[in-house]
Image 1 (cartoon, each protein chain N blue to C red):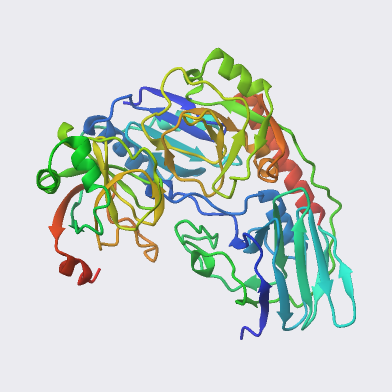
Image 2 (image 1 turned 90 degrees about the vertical axis):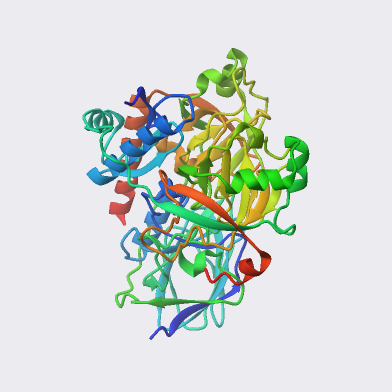
Length: 314
Length: 224
């Protein structure tokens, strides 16, 4: 049992097990978590013949260096990622959205994500991970999920079971497109802000700050003036909610966000744009564009349809 | 009972029960929360009750704002159902290693620590909501004499188990976390237990909580 494993020679910056995340726990203070970029997560699994919600390894910026031991296994990487496969006698640079085979002793060196934040590694088998509330997704804040709720660390081994015996090569023609305009529905405290502040929010550029992680994305730019109260009575948050604290700089809640908060909500990023939003690197410029609820619903249907189409092409 | 339902983004309902923070309004929120939980409505994937709001998130692949709104409007939630509440006692040690802000609080409130502790430990608290970090309970209400603002510069790390006061509320840090509450002691009691698949939270909305002062020895001998 468990003779197939990766030895982690370098863990990378923020490497964690993730899947679709866990619902119905906001009321006790636990967010969804799960893969930040849901589309790339699902595609990675399909490329190795798994069900789309199998556990995968998510990495950010610098990825892990893994040495493989065991019977032949396929893997696929999605996102916009530079990686190298080192075999006994040669090394090749790999392509995203394509499956490759690893043999006993091969090394997979995930060097970095290119002008994007998150990448996904799926294997044609099942990572041996523990589940909490029907998900393996790691929430490092509450130490919940696989790997004792912690990031993957240097020197540890990651075991894989149920390796698929029929390794077939799969490929998808797909390039991640980037967006600069993030579409937003007005928030419940939109009227807390001055006319000038509202105008700035929808017209000016904001820059993504380095202080961004799986919990939230901080933005810098022209200050948005609050004319009512810089605090509200604490209430629920969701991923995509844009809060404006007293300093006037927006913070967008992301998948590991705190479940309640007390800053006014100026807007909410539409569901169709979330996967693209999380991939924007610090220093990127973004603009918010106002949309109505009905349009947001249609845009999500289209985005979801596109994802399903991509998955069915594999 | 809900004053207004609007959308928060494209995948959530924002149910507004009023603007004040009191037990009466909060009990309405909790009643709705529990009723919706019982209904087990397909597509709803999260509920967040707070002082006077209830946020209902749903899976946009299965449902949309209008359909969930109709379901909630047609839900029969009465004031008659008795809220299930547990009574919970939390041991707290106020040794100087734990009561990080007691001096500051004495100055802010202009009363001495004995009086602060006497009032705090003589009080019955009501749990309005849990969250921010897993299992953190928001307990009220402190009388006016004990109400203080947050620290001007929040701590980068508040130790796990810290018991803090801010405005009319008390809470317990279930994990080490950044935070700005005035810390008066620490509990050895596990408030959030992630190994429990069911009921990981010791304290839930609607529960009644009292604190009991313990010595340093009792703190370190606590088997919890």
